Image (tube, rainbow, N blue to C red; front, side, top):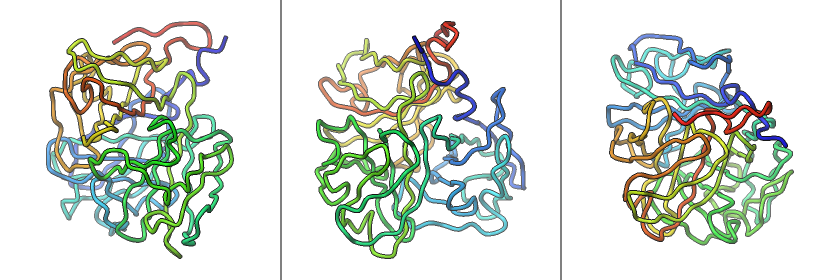
Length: 336
């Protein structure tokens, strides 16, 4: 029996904490395995600053902000990312207080490596304003979670999650707002993604004529990633969610009503409970009291916070592993 497809999660995903210097600096990832990232999502932990998202497809100088619908920002020579390196990334000096490398600011960076092995693909496509447009991808597996963003203009961050509803291809979530799930047949054309394509409708948000979108696609890999759903119980002895690994990263969203997207990770809180959240739809700094245990095989809520554990409320999540519950040699991991 295969317990995991990936024994070394650090080869494909790592969380990095660093402190801004105000001058050019190289940031080295902490993992035992070197990893050159293809997607970096950074946020200042202690200040009211934007979330910045950069990838190797658009180029390291081009950034989007997850908390607003602004068009792509292309950095100058004295701010932003300078390069994605063999085991981390290099930052330019932050002369404009943009929030990536401001002196003495504590930061977090969530970093992914693009790989079909790890179930992650990045691609761009040009819009044609035509319904039922198929976009090819390279996962060789059905995408379970997709974030698509037109970066030429001020457009929404449109999200597909395969457990959002019983027919997720008919619905959408929006990363830069707190909105609940909504029906939208012009986003995915009511067509479920396949192992070779996903489908977009004639929405100006995703498929405006001659405008370009970036798509981040993930497919579950046993013991490494999970894109599921759960129902809250409104109790301090909260819902347990099985993932098959000890989480390094957890993104959640209430879907049946408004609530902020929330991110916890294993570096900002190194022991249980993880209490420190950041919000992709907000510039807010680290906020505590989101008590959640990261266990050897999943996560469990330890609070009645409605935004993540409301009684009878519906939620989706995105999680990546620190360690598989049991590796391919049959060796189990511990809770932290």
